[in-house]
Length: 453
Ligand code: GDP
Ligand code: GDP
Image (cartoon, protein in one colour):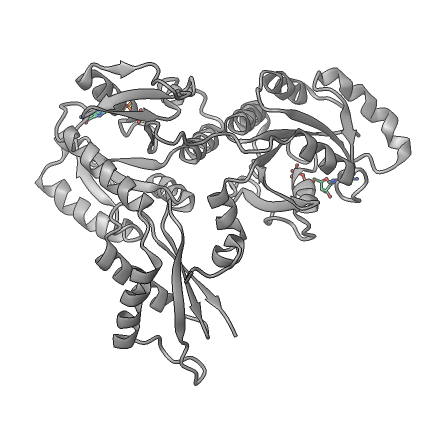
């Protein structure tokens, strides 16, 4: 076989491999300053802080690969946002909801030197409803003497408080053993093979997400409650479009608007992340009548990070006149340059204009996302491309590309085996040519390089 005999993690990097292999996810939740980041660092075996602590800034990266006695899993730290006193409760319940929706096991961290605060009690109440296993970690139990304090945490109703000191490492090995015991063998089913394709309708507030949802559900007059043989999450909605069922994820979140201003952004961003996590395709809604904003671009970044297929939908087209259209074109050139591969559709959820164009674009994007190029064909093609345009010489050496393979789909991920480093510019060139040859419209394409000596 011409497939290289490498571990997937060696081919595409540990993090992408973890995402591709669908490792079980352990979520760490809790109030600020209880020691979540310290525990995450302890679990992933890193001494330095996961990120610098910048108050008020939402971390972009929250998932880290980890392993314990040979078992691999992902750790998710949903903290990283310092809410004010008023927003604290809401922010922690958003964390808990996010964890309940995306994780396979949840660890609630409590500061044993403080005891159970009312916020701890509120989040424990939420977590007691979780179908996901929940473990309680009583942190900052730095010595045997401190253990007595931790015993009161039984009152949280989450079972035994596992006494640890994240900063000293005390008890963390036992906690990890318990995590592995309670962690399901296989991660929760995020996709049902042969089930409806899963779509996340995302965009900043007021772009028209619920209007579009209503339009799609109403137009077809066939909201399916349950599709035989699949389990539809109660927060999702299956809508039949052009004769095929599509699962719109977390529509409950769309229909139930969050009114409180405090923490709204944070809550919305967690929900977007959770929706992307369980979807295969993102429909990014942008209000065409307004200037493309920072908030739009933040959602776009989350989509790019998620590796999902993408269709960009410009809504409220009924409000767009000649002048606005001219400005919008310029904004698109400037702001959407990162996703030249995404189809753009102009619609009006209000009037129904062009809504029927969505499904063909969604199908095409998912087709690209799933596509696999056979290794033989890939290498024959690549040989010609490289002969015509060899990689630039670096440090007096001409890197050679010896072999390529598509290591993963969803999204398509290619690995080039080379004798030297390939510059980002050349990797982008290869990506462009891959797209020209094999057509990945609507899907991200990743090109990774493995240097072999
Ligand atoms: P997070 O906001 O929940 O992520 O908390 P951090 O991990 O940033 O920790 C908050 C503070 O608690 C830091 O000053 C840590 O050094 C400290 N801390 C974390 N774990 C322990 C522990 O086990 N014992 C003690 N004494 N301090 C800890
Ligand atoms: P969401 O917050 O993204 O779910 O946005 P909504 O669906 O609640 O819409 C926000 C506002 O925009 C509402 O007042 C809608 O009536 C309006 N709206 C939504 N779609 C359109 C559209 O295509 N054209 C116009 N003119 N207004 C729209």
